[in-house]
Length: 479
Image (tube, rainbow, N blue to C red; front, side, top):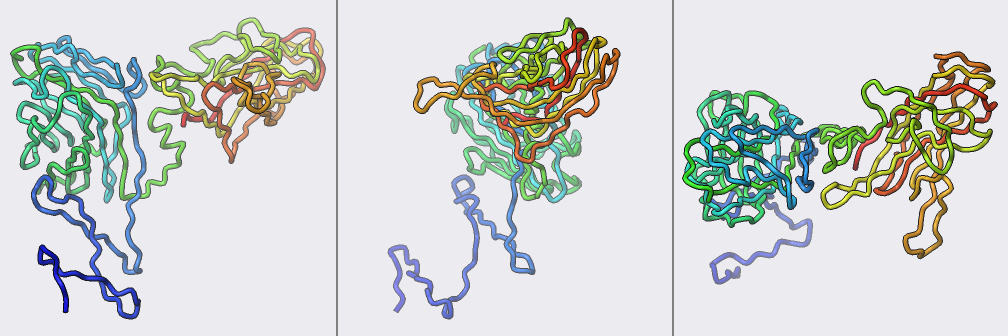
């Protein structure tokens, strides 16, 4: 006889004998009813060939505001009527000084655009907090964040999907081509949030639906209204963060917005992006310094850079106009003793700090092309190039420490790259024969604090006059 528990639910144990097994439905619970009061479940999809569908996530963009300066390569800043933004304590702070000017606007826009692909879904996520005097904004204080182009006046975005936080609470908004806003049924009241507490705000955007979550609990969703082919008309939009004053603000005792991290994924499609493409799409190409540092190029190559007075190469240091940077331009004298190594290029992967993200430097390829920049006397010159990396000091003579040596150094690892040659008494402008263009199927990884160098060795004849100018390039990203 079957038994029931105290809730009158039937006690069941499924057969363990496969010949006696029946069938059970498979479903996943997306919401246990915490918000709506009704359990939301979804059933997986199986193909006609008995294969279960699997959703794949592809990172599209992410950034952390743990530095003290704006990453001007990744973000565009805008201000109107004296509202400001700052970065401190691991947050981007929007209007932290609580400027109350009517019509005031401060915004940040990612330079990366996020594209909506057919039959795909977007996942947009912000880790953020509400700060100031009160967790409830004052009348006419508006905070919006999501996928949209921030307006340059204190009006609402005209196309996109985003959160809006006001004294009425947290709302989920969709607006398509200046059309009527579609919102979730019941905004989440301000009383559900604590001042300065970090929350995870997430949007799932499909072709026909949009859902909004706080700390992985759905606060509302809706279908894209009839008459709209997609959630936003633009097809591709940046990540937007804006705080605006739509009218007179009664006092400075209001609310401002703080963002610690942003993240976006393409889900339910196999994008086929390689990891280097993903990293470079986030602004992590190695030609640019790491997040948190003042934005500049890592290479020794500036506008109209002159060749300068040629450097004599040595193997314990590197001085300009040899290449002080991750690739770029180097000018040197081919006077190094035959078979002696000289540092043509040197770069140290920054150690980083809590405000400048330390990252591994991942290198997939190296290119070198050279020309005579002052005519040779003597020769011929034959240069062999190698890559040295992983050493703890600029000198190629850096030794490897013995086991368990406090603060011990590391020696450079050497990889042959190729060669270039110049004829006897080569004239100005003579291009080197040969050249280097090496791709690594197993990439070179340089850790924070370690050096990487291009090493030149003349196996020809030492000249008595002349110089060589080399262009050095890297195919690399920050990991």
